[in-house]
Length: 122
Image 1: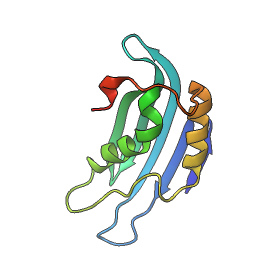
Image 2: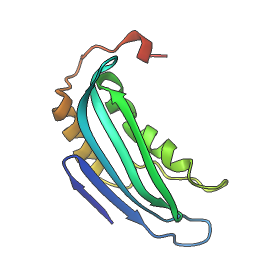
Image 3: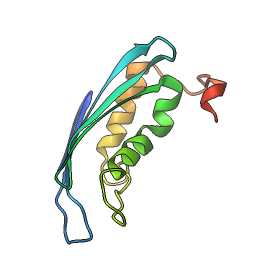
Image 4: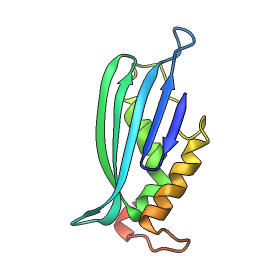
């Protein structure tokens, strides 16, 4: 199951076999200003992965958020799974991330050609 509304995504999955994994996650996000990074998005991913409580918060600056927010969310989710289980990329199974991407673009007024801070390139 997957649900989207601006600023909030809820995704749920039930393991299909012992090699698979279950999760029930909410991803909340809002545009904020950080004193050192400027405008960006504050994320909070909370819920459960394989029965373990998850509550992860992180900020991505405007020039970092769109190219990497799904990768960051997927990496944080992966840290809750024991090896060799792999958490799928959050972007792949759900069209709702297209809506999330567009919502973030609007919240931050992102346009093609916006500048990137050199320190964020490394």
